[in-house]
Length: 578
Image (cartoon, rainbow, N blue to C red; front, top):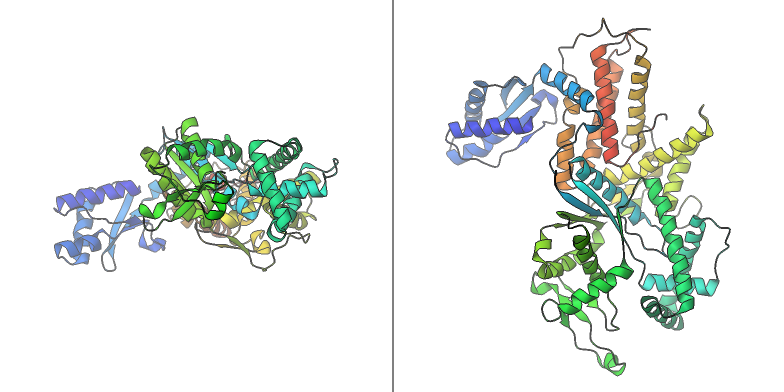
């Protein structure tokens, strides 16, 4: 409908011999001001030296000469806004469309024929799955679903750092402390490895001897030159990757491709060395480096191409590739393996400057890749309580945060008349949704203040609130199956606020893709849930013991379908009971 209104306006401007301008067509905040409103008269009036309200009246009158049946009336308001009111039939038909399309409601062919790769989560084996990985996963999974819903072939990719100083620190800690009890679960073994990493990291910063030994281990890992180190490495890598898989399953994510730093380092180094003197430069070694027989580092002078960029090292003086070089290898691997039309990467905002430099270097090697690479950056998570520890007193990780959230939900439902299996299922679905919604409701780049109690509340701005509202709607639908609707088929003359929101869902999905920001969907669903609860409180749906209002029931069903589809786009399950 928005496109139809834009088309009507453009045709009218041509009739008035007015050049096209950058006007907007939006939904007014208050439905009293129509279903759509445009500022076209105010934008164009200044250019042609005419009063905005007079021009708005002229545009209105011309459109009214050929008014589509979907538009009931047009009004001029304020300084020159033109408001469009949709007809009763339009809303009735939109409810019908929702019920006919079901799980396809809101889908589009906007990206049909396109292949889009989304890289997200990116945890590092030998280190804990931290909060940042949880945030990146929630955002990346939602973006993946949005592009998939928009018609694209979607490829989910995960880039995991299985080499580097962090691995050497963890292996040093393991070799000093010893292997864990074989009877531990995969998760417990992964946590043990995480503690060994922490111990090794602390010693690296405080003990010169430990630092030297860790650097030796780091080189040995790259070259696979030490049998004992290889054994510990292979075991630790396998355990932590298996532990990550358990978390991915809990989060509802399945990846198509796993990329690893150990493989990307080789490919990236080859590209960098082939482009020394073209894109990269070799710095002069310091006296100390010369005495050790070391060469200078291989660097990229980003500021030579853009003053906002800076210089970064791609191969250090020890001849080892840095994260930057591995990122080049990763990009080449993505395009060689899948050749996506668009490659999206999700990281924290602290990596934004780093990513800009790497992408610039890549663009000089492969100019055709530049316009196909997109970077999404998210802020940090802070806690409303100020505490940075889990409920069990440990340092908070992404995994502990998930389990803490599920534990709180389990406490809330423990006294309900449900089986243990139902309670555990609810705690998983609702606990995960509480975290995901808390992450996704904020615009990208902004920091998140996470409040445990508010996040799992069944009222207000939370994932469980949306789920609870959906479950309430579904309970009405189930109950109404035994009711008679034959003598209650009249359609109300008044359009409800709920109907005025339901038809907007496809537009919201398109906006979420255009901006690559899932928070538009989260905000919309919250408004939709509020409108449903108001509708439910003021409308007789189940009239008596055996009759229900047919059209009102259709609105409830349309709401449930829209909420279910919207929650899916956020990576949130819709439970059957709560």
